Length: 208
Image (tube, rainbow, N blue to C red; front, top):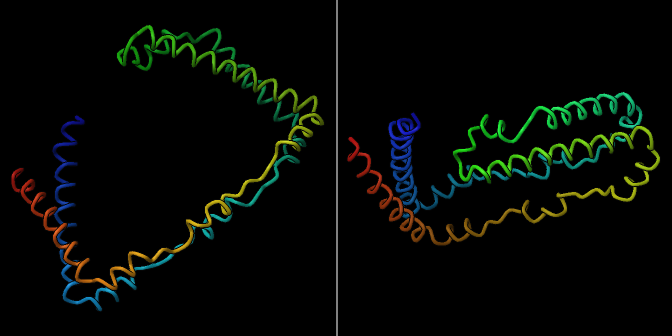
């Protein structure tokens, strides 16, 4: 089924896509050679700068949920401990590596013994995570002052807006070069698009 989808739909789609795209590239290159000013006007209309710093600013605003967490710590903690205890109990008593490997069909992926070892290691890792989660939730419920002191030491706010500031600056070097050398860029585009056009055109007509 996957081979049929690939051969009958995906391959013809990509062949036609690159064939048509190469025609557009040839037309754009020819426009740069013969009508550079008009093409620059078209490029100017298409150039729009969208700042990710402004769009994603809301993700960079720190939100303090500690008050709500400690206010409902006992209720939320009881539910979370029950869920963690139940999942840990199921993992320990009702799940084994052999049945897990058979359920997902992973025994065909490689050495059966190695697959069983990996599956069992994952199971015990999840068990350890459940036990650790129960311990942390219990500390939040019964020793909130200690958890609060630990959070004060380790809580730090790191803003990616400062780290990625340089990525939000427009770089117009390519545009400037194209404006200065439209014929050269147009010739390169025509030649490159012509190679792609001939290649995918042959593939298209060869497939009928």
